[in-house]
Length: 158
Image (cartoon, rainbow, N blue to C red; front, side, top):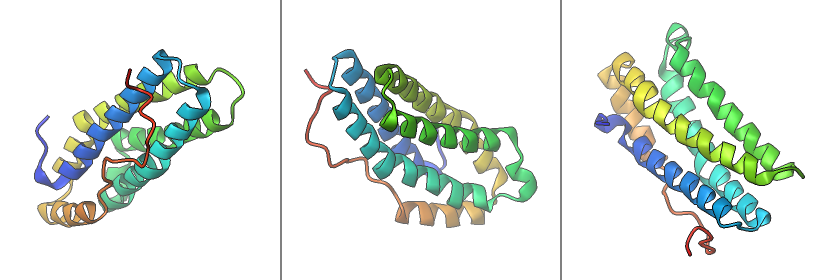
């Protein structure tokens, strides 16, 4: 989907999020040790998702008026951020079926990226003024989350 330049750094980060979700699925399919998958997910959440969600909320959502924030797509995005963080926390502490929860997390992340690309970003682009978008772009570029994680165990490869 074609993005205005203002939100491209977030789209790049979405590409990285999809890569991380794919790696989790591959690790699960290959029977990777649960503790390895948990550590990887923790790294993804703390180094990528939490900062990324924070950018979307503080740089984009905070620029919306109170009325604009009530839009269903904005509420859905915020709700999904909380759900994914809560699920990651559950995965970190469960003694149950980690593989099933990890699969759910990976699927949820993939669907969330699709929602933001197809609905949330167009809403933002059509709602914020050019000046607001330019200001947001500057902040997003300053706070961009690079796609490289400090991880040396490529469990997703054969």
